[in-house]
Image: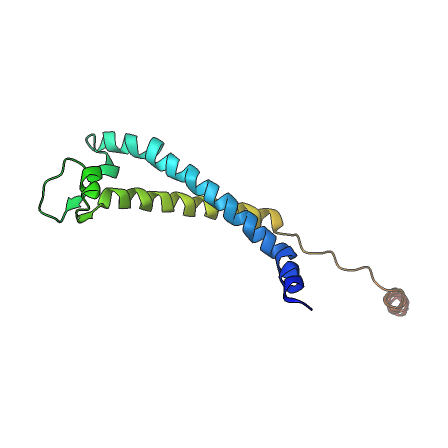
Length: 137
């Protein structure tokens, strides 16, 4: 078997294709969650805690004053961007919760009722009838 044929067989297996689709959908879902956090969730939270824009919060380690995180990064100053970290943590929690809900729903759908007992064979039926006849005597 040639290496090319082995590779084709590997790629065409169902679980590899399922994984590829999952990665693509996951990347798209990640963009949706990023937008949800940055554009919808964080602005109201910022207003509630005093008009703070979390994405711009940082600690300047360089000692030089910069008017914004973007300016500090453009100057390649050493900063700890803890506001961006807070956004990423919230994004992670949303993705983790969404995966939890998805897995819970899939488990509920795939949970099967126990299979019914198989019908008795002809021999078992005959033995049951013989037993019942003997009991009635």
